[in-house]
Each structure stands twice: as C-alpha cells, then as structure tokens.
Length: 74
Image 1 (tube, rainbow, N blue to C red):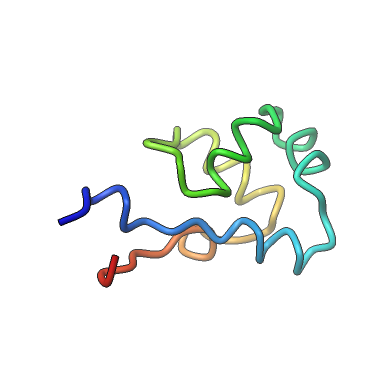
Image 2: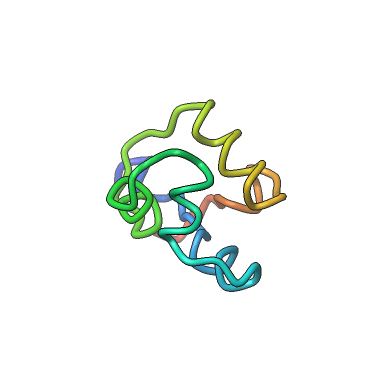
C-alpha cells in the first residue's frame, strides 16, 4: 500500500498550460526556485508550506483543490 502522500496529485502542469505560464515565470512570481516547483509538479514533494500554497493560489488565481487532488486508486 502506498504512503498517503503518494496519493496526492499535483495539477500544476494543467494550471500552467491553462494560464500560458512557464515554470520559470511562476517561480519568479511566487518567489521560490524552479527546482522546488519542479519537485512539486512531478509529485515528488513530501510537504508544502501554507505560505507557498497561498502564493501559488494567488499567482494562479485558483483554490488549493484546483492545485491538488486525492487519488484513492494509487
């Protein structure tokens, strides 16, 4: 059985594509590194700070539920 964190799926690719943004542009807007955003985008992050989540939601004009979902089939 996978760990609970492995069931959380990040939809950053879709949000970026929908808004015509690159990872580098978003990193600049949010103030975090491209490497850290890439870790998040590729579902390798173990945690996210609320301040980072809020900054991403502000920059992407979305809700946390738009950015992440829970996949019970994983």
